[in-house]
Length: 498
Image 1 (cartoon, rainbow, N blue to C red):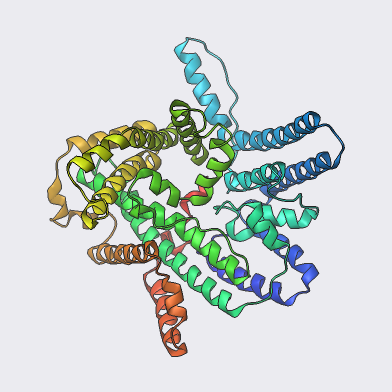
Image 2 (cartoon, helix red, strand yellow):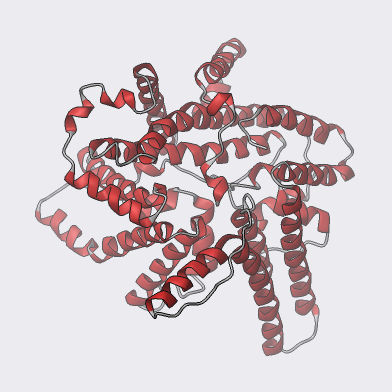
C-alpha cells in the first residue's frame, strides 16, 4: 500500500480514528494488526520474514537479559552475550543475503571463476525482493545491540516489540528507528492531541508535495533521458543528473516526512531523516544530514565497533571506506551501488587529508570562511561531487554509468539549454517551468530549515481564518499539480527497492 494512493487515504484515517477510541489495552494489538495488513498488501507471504526477524531478535533480547541476571563470572557472561548477538546478526543477515544478495554473489563468483577458466554451474533463485527488508532488518538488529550495550531494556511484551519492528508509517522505507526512541513511546498508549495532529497533518501535506508534485514530475524528465541515454547525450545527461539529485531527495524525504506526519497524528515522534542536505558545505556535512537514520546506524553499529578514529589515521580512513562500501551494498546488489558508496567514502578521506592544505590556503589568501560567497562556493562544490556520485546510483549498471560520464565529457551541446530541446524530454514547457517553480519552493523551505525557521509553526500560529484559507489552497495545489504515474496510478517510492 503506497502512501500516495487512494487506499492509504482511506486506510490511515480509519486506523487513527479507531486507535484513539478503542481501550488502552487494545491499542498495541490494533496497530500491530494494521501494520501487518499494510505490509501484506504488497506480498502477504513475506510477512513471515518480518515475523521471523521479530522472533529472533525478541528472543535474543530475552536471552541477553537472562545472561545479565545469572551469576556468571564476567568473562563467561561476556562470552554468552556475544554468542547471542552473533546468532541474532548471522541469522538475520543470512535472510537478507539470500533474498537480496545471493544471485549477485553467484554472478560475481561465476565471473571470477570464468577468469580462471573454471566452468561451474552455480545456482540462481528467482525470488522477489521483499519490500523494505533492509530497513526492518537493520531496525531489529539495532534492538539486539542496544540490549547488549544496556542502552535499552529487553522488551518482555512480544506484541509491543513486534509493533516496534513493523510500525507501518516507517516500515518499508524508514526512518530506521532506534528502540530507545520508538519502543519506549509504544509502551505508553496515546491520547488524541489536537496540536500534534495539526502539526502531523502539515508534515504529511509537505511530504505529499515533495513526492507527487516534485519528485514524480522530475522523474518523467530523468527517466526519459537516462532510459535512452544514447539518444540524449552531453548536456541532456548533465541536466538529468542535476534533476535526479532533486528527484531522489524529494522522493525519499517525501516518504520520511509523510511517515513522520502520520506517526505524529497518532502521538508518536519519529526521528528526522533529512536536514537540508544540499546546503551542506562538505561531503561529510552532507552525510550528517542525508538519510540520518542510516548514517547514524552505520556510525553506531559498524564504524565505532571497527575502531572508529581511535586506532590511528590510516585505520580511521579504512573504517570510513568500509562503512561507505557497505552502505552502497546496502542500497542494492550491484557494482554501481558499491561504486557510489566507495566514491563517497573516498571523497571524505581526500577531504580530511587535504584539510591542512585548505586551512593554509585560506590563511595565505586571507579568505573569510563566514562570508556568503565562501559558503556558496563550498555548497556548490559539495553538490557537484555528490551529484556526480548519483550517476552510479541512478544508472542501471556500472558500465552504463561509465558510458554516461563519457557522454557528458565528450559531447558538446550547450545550445539545448536555450532552443527548447529540454521540453522534448517528457515534460512540456508549462510542466518544466512548474517543476522549476516547485524546486525554488523546496530551496526556500530548506534555507528556512537550515536557519532554524519552522514554517509549520508559523502557519499554525496564525488566526483560524488564515489557516482555513491556506490549508485548502495547499490541498488544491496537490490535487491540481500532483503527478500520479501512468494512467494516474500511484508511483512507487525509489527506496522501496532497498
